[in-house]
Every structure is written in C-alpha cells, then in structure tokens.
Amino acid sequence: MKYIKTIITVFSFILVTNCDSFLEVDQIGKSSIPVFFSDMDGIRGALPGAYSSVYKYYGEELVLYPDVAGDMLQLVSVGDNPMLSQYNYNSNPQDELTAVGGIWTDANEALVNVNNILEYQPELLDAFPESADELRIIKAEALFLRALIHFDLVRVYAQPYNFTADASHIGVPVILKTPSSDDNVARNTVKEVYTQIIKDLKESETLYGDETGSESSYYASKRAVYGLLARAFLYTENWTEAVSYSTLAINSTPLAEGQDYLDMFLEVEDDDESLFKLNGKLKSPELISFYNLQSPLGYASEKLMNLLDENPDDLRLQLLEFNSGANTYGTLKYLKESLPIAEKYYNIIVLRTSEMYLIRAEANNNLDALTEAIADVKTLLARNYQKEVSEITITENTKEAVAALIDVERTKELCFEGHRLYDLTRTKQDMVRDASTSSNINEVLYPNSMFILPIPQKEMDVNTGMIQNEDY
Image (cartoon, rainbow, N blue to C red):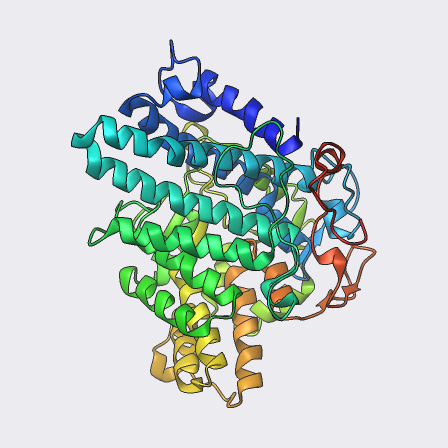
C-alpha cells in the first residue's frame, strides 16, 4: 500500500472515530466514511474537521519553515530545536517527525478531509435538495481549502513556478479523490498544480455568486478566495490577474489602522484586516513554543532589526518584545498575553489586506505602472509610520528600485508569517544572512536544490511512482 494511500486510509479511520480531534460531532454508529456522509450532520461535522486539520500543519512547521530557511530569523542553535535542520540546510528525507515528514503527512491528511467533503457533497445534494444553498457554500469552502493545501505543498516540495520557462518542472501530486490501494501516486508538473489551484478557486468564486460567504475570517469566504487567487497569480507571474484580484480583496476588507492593526495580533479580533485566519482557540501548536517569549527558539535577526529600525515611529516595532537578558527581539504576532489560559487563542493569519497592497504594488511594477505601485507602498508606509499619505516621500523611480523597495516592505510587513523563503526564490534572489547568524550556512545561491524540502523517504520506499527531489 502506497504511503499517501496509507495516510488517507488511516486518517479516514480517524476522521470517523475521533470526534475530539477533528469533527467535534457525535459519530456513534457512523463506522465508515460513506455512512458518515449519508446525512447533513455528517458533512456539517466534517467541515470544522477540515479547518482543524489545516490548522495542524500550519501550526506545526508550515509557517516556521520559510522564515527559518530565510535570512530574517536567528535560531537558538543549541539544545532541542526541531527546526535546526532547515535552518542549516541539511534536511534529511528520513526525518519523518519534523518539517520534512510533518508537513507532507499533515497536509495530505488535511487533503483527505477536504476531498471527502467534495466527493460526497453531490450525493447529499441529490438526497437533500432543500439544503442546496448550504451545500453550495460547503463546497465553495472545501474548494478553497483544497486549493490552499495544494498551494502550500507545491511551495514546500517544489521549485517556484518560474524555475523553468514553462513551469514544466516537477511539482507535487494533484490529489482530487482518494487513490486506490494499487495506485502509485505520481507528481504533477508545477504548472499542472497551479492550474488546479486556480481552477478550484475560480469554481469556489462562482459558487459564492453574489454572496460574500461568512462574515467571520475564521472561515473561507469570497474575500478569502480573492486573496488566495491574488497570491497564486503573483506566484505564477500573471500580473494583470494579480492586480485584479488583489484589488477585489482590498475593496472587500479595509486596512487595519493604528491600535486596530496591533490588536489584530495582540488580541482576539474578528473585525480586522484578515481575509482568512485559522482558529487557534485552546490549541497548542509548535509555533507557540518556538516563539515563546521567555525562551524562544527563534527571534528577529540583526538584518531584520536593521530594516525595522530605519524609522523609530514604525508601528510594527510594537509587535516585537525585547529580552534584555538575551539581547533579542521576539515576535508578538502569535501570543495573546492578556488572555487567561482558559481563553487562549493562537490564531494564525493566512491572508490579510496589507499583503494584498504589496501584491498589487509588485504586480503593477512588473506591468510598468510605477505610479500605481508607489501609491500602494505609500499607503502602507503612511499606516505603518502613522502619518498621512501626503507626508510620505518615495524617491525610487525605476522599475528595479521600486522592486527592491517592495521587497523590503514585504520583509518588514510579513516577517514571522511564513513568506520569506518563497519571496526569495520566486524573485530568484540569493539567501544571504548577516554575519552574526548562528547557522553554519551564511548564504545559499539561487538556483539551488536545497531551497526545497525532500520527499519523505517513507513515501519513496513504498511508492514507485514518486520521484525524489534533486540532490536528496
């Protein structure tokens, strides 16, 4: 039995037997997947399970990996640090329990949940036509989640879209239904993966129709679809569509300003600039242990602090906490210290409006619309420096200079949120750390096979259709 198939079989069993972990519904008497999905209660229960399974891989290694492997984070290099292999660029296919195997396994488990929903939704639509509207929105949410999972997997285990001229290089498997025990699940090209991602998102957009979906950013919605489409088009360098969808996202959800911006991270806020976030109520993800302020495993690098210190009025400096004993700056983006333990929320913001401004600026710059690109950067700087837009001066006036400016602003705005490595590789930059890095790797030059993780060895051992990444 193939490894991905094994994940799916085992996880499907968990799905219908462990309501505490995923479904949070009474499943007595529902001993198989078809029986579980035979009524509306089943699919209603499966949807929160799908969100929970996505949170699992985001909260463990997915958000950490691209920052750990980037140039803006410093790690404690002694003791038991689960991300040291990625920090030092010596990931091993045998590492089943850390990022290499953890992201692969957990993301594919999440894919099982989502694909089960999508597989049985049409049957329920036939059986319960009076629930057609509810089932339509459930399908729209599930399609968004499936696109997100494939997007995450292809970024971790495959080179960026522009690595080859036609994106024909090897990607990850596109899994739209549960494989049979005889299937050797193969890897699609990166182009095929992104084609499916965009297809799922476009179908989700259509299903929402004139509705916006949930008002809460804890759930997929039309604005979340806009945001992920904007990001997918940015990664595929479809600049025109990136502008269009980032604009739709911006129009749907305004920027958070001042204290509201800080509270988006520091408090439990739902009415903020988040387009989509994962509900971390009473969760205990690895992410929180890693960024624990008392004894963090990772903190801001000197390179990042030099960027943020360029303007002492930068609002984002208030999202860092100085540890005088260790002389380090830790992030406050995941820690709600004002809440009692019984009410802890460790939310993970996946998409937000600030990123959409940066996407639109980058896309417009690549379309030679420098005026529009600079205007969006000014809007963000005005918010971050707590000034009026008219008070912001930008002297960059060439495409290359504006691109560099946008890169710096992405670094400052999205630090600790799981973007940096992907921004380096998709823009074909070298990864260069400052001289004080605790890693034995100071730089990795682009292109490089080490910029992606290996396929877990367990997958390679049992799946003859799987191809390992180069140099692993």
